[in-house]
Image (tube, rainbow, N blue to C red; front, top):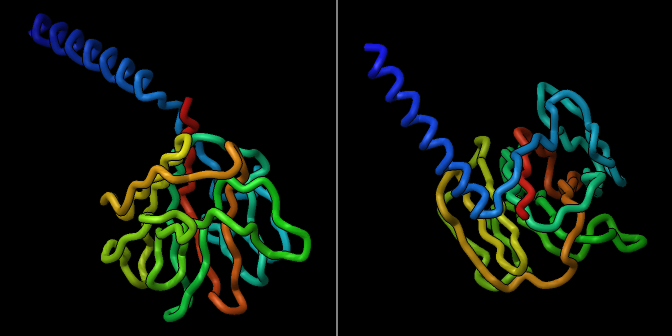
Length: 197
């Protein structure tokens, strides 16, 4: 019995070593929480009203952004999003932008859309679109990978699209778009980022 336990332990250790090698070879980093579920620490609220409610970032009012304090280059961003409006909802997640132009509520690009019928699509990137993976009225999971000029999206655990035509800044902020007057209120939760080396 002791021999079997010892051999099982060795097997687990070997698998762990190989898993670690695979992660390093892939350039993976540490998955960290961008939103702690309690405060907006690490975020800046710009031109909108956003609060933490029931463990969610609640985009309550205005046209603006809830923006990371830090800029990111290559990363895997995971988040869950839900629209509170029952029709014509609109929000989004911006990435790799350096600033918001004066007099504007949002940067010109790039946006992983959260607009009805365009969920998960990036209109500025040819081929970055899909249909049929989004669930109306529910929490939906998104996984956005950005590495160099490569961008890909998963929606609810299924591949949505993959493109190699990202241009522009090599690093930038990540921002949650508030477009409440037209697009309604939105919720975000379980926001994680893994910086890629």
